[in-house]
Length: 401
Image (cartoon, rainbow, N blue to C red; front, side, top):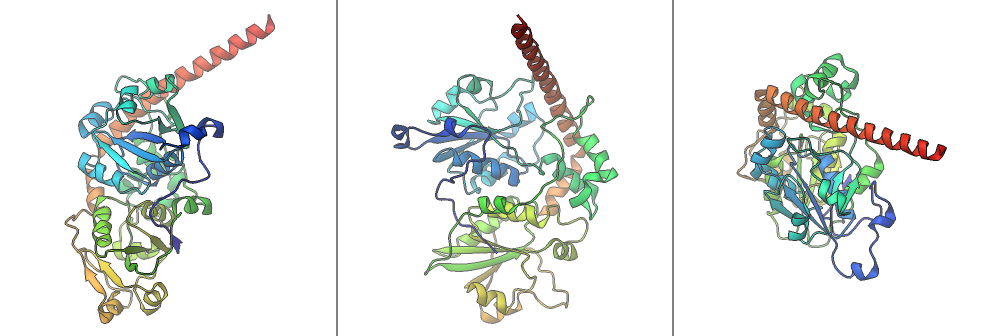
């Protein structure tokens, strides 16, 4: 069980590549709100994106996130998986985000920061390049209005697409699998090797990471405690719309999400589901602003013990099919008996299956997109290495004089 709730205060620890002194503000500056800017594609939003935004919010008081259009992404990277409307809503649902800017420019400039009264922008410790291989943050870096945060290890679009395409049940430990390695060669490797910023690494869950995502509040007297359960796999806009609809069922909602273990999800979903393991799905759900608490490994049947323990007032389920329990019983029999079960319609029928089909349909396009992206990154990385070696050689020669 993990407590969550809406993000209301700054975190004391800043998980950042910048020095603490660089981020500290003078007493005069702290009298006003420090406005932080982030931008990106935010395609296939995952907990790595959420963690970047969490870190960025910890560097200031008010977080503005610019999201690029489909046209801009197609021009510089290749076609996105999700539409811009879907991506706008996904980012807005992340609890650390205070404001989004639709159609933000792909190249971040001082004009953009000034237009939205932002003190500085924050990006991960990887690199983002334009179609002609230029650093999109070059101008703001040059003017000292750029900060870095740590990239989240163990999750990437490359990795997630690989899990979808492999259609195996062992993809959570596929780092050494020969089929998986072939996928990463096809999808995430350029003709001259791997980029240090794009590729596959292993996700290792820690208690500290859960605490960082789950900083929140207990249910208060007068709150309506609402329980929902499911896989919430590849947390997407369909889930967001459902949880928003659930949140609106009460004046003071306290939404608890029960996440089923991987084996349970595979029992009723089959194929290679879940795409994300229980630890990854936990972080994805915790990042959503409509969620107050998460139960890790919730029982499939919503029974008496669970309802009494959490003092549940209402149990909700969407319009998707309800699979029977192992004994063929209705998993919602108890809340129905109590008269607290409600079917809600979010108006969005998107499922994880639909996302997988989008990926499979456009597999070659996505492979080509990533290879092109990585080739640009390798060229920049090699240039950076040559520059660093040249500077070291110069320092050595100067010291010898």
